[in-house]
Image (cartoon, rainbow, N blue to C red; front, side, top):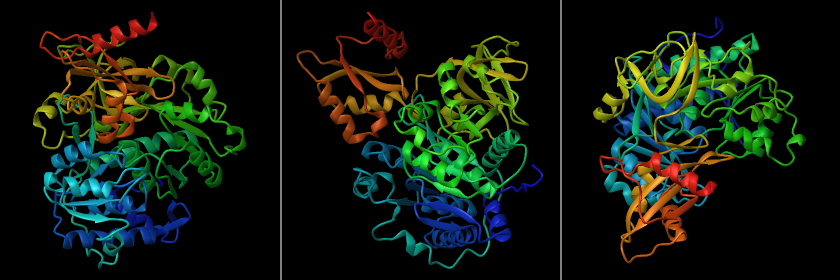
Length: 518
């Protein structure tokens, strides 16, 4: 990509494009358009304000924001002063915000006052003492975020090293606290260059293509694969603050978007829409997907939108993609689990349960090493030790190699993927177990035709007690994001256990699947 400059720090790309063409549109959000010059000035002013608030190198700045300009300002400003952005989902409720923010211990929390029916400001004030009493800044009430943008701009960036962390993204884990993945300037830029290079290979040339930024900041795809790639490419970025297929399609039509990325679930939703044929999607030259295996029927349906389809493989720990398909690949291989070849500088190996490397075609656990691989988890040495070995990320996914081609066949992990979101069973189980009438609970992921998986819960009441499905679902709705709330609750007399006395979720799921198929 000879037309794309290569820098060590993410903010350098913003400065480069602002200096090169300050009047070029950087962000479009609703009817508002923000140029690269305005983007940079807002970032520099916010950086100065954060420094005056006492934020220093390594401190965390948490956000509870949808994908809108204020998040982009915060992320880039934080990266300029050596602090770390910790994005939270606007659908998180009390239990989640308390758990995640108490782990991150932010100096500052920047939040929207409310989103849909979620009163975020009220919840944050409830948990403030539990999360270290950070300073709060709100978009719509005092202290106002916009006041920070009136500050004198920072005189010079304070970044010290490309290995300095700029993001913490929470992902699934094996303990009560989901894993807080640390991502650095180097991680983000390496992944962005790898993915952008792979996408541009399908186009055959470099351009400042308009980019749709439609995933939430708390999802690695939203912050790195969409927002960060947009900044690297100097793109016009069209921000969408919540997922709605009709809004996405209208943006593709109106802005003449050439490529669009989403998980298969999202494509299935779009293709099931009434009135799909009313949108002009002729600008689409490439669809990009990952996260779930494509089935042959969905591939054929996707080709009605666009003939070219690309897939990749990665995770939060790899800052997004680490592999990507090639323009001349047979797309029907995607139905076999094919997810592309490694980016330049990425090493993939397949190992057995003892860690021994396996040969070509042998199925084992996938390990990934490369410049976009995280150094580990924030304040979780035990999880870091389990999740990384000799510089390799231990994926928990099963697959095999054919030459340099990677194929995925399944997951060892018990985490549940609801569309593009990750749900940790224990998060939901902890909420359910607050009910004193319940002796045991286990949460599993069950197949769903749109979302891939949805959450189901199995509960065992204490002797003499009774509980209803409706009661448990309602209690979860009060404390959890909607994608984590069980779609179904089954009341049983027992739950299968492992030899260590833990709920055997794999065996339980098998039993439930057999019961509903009879």
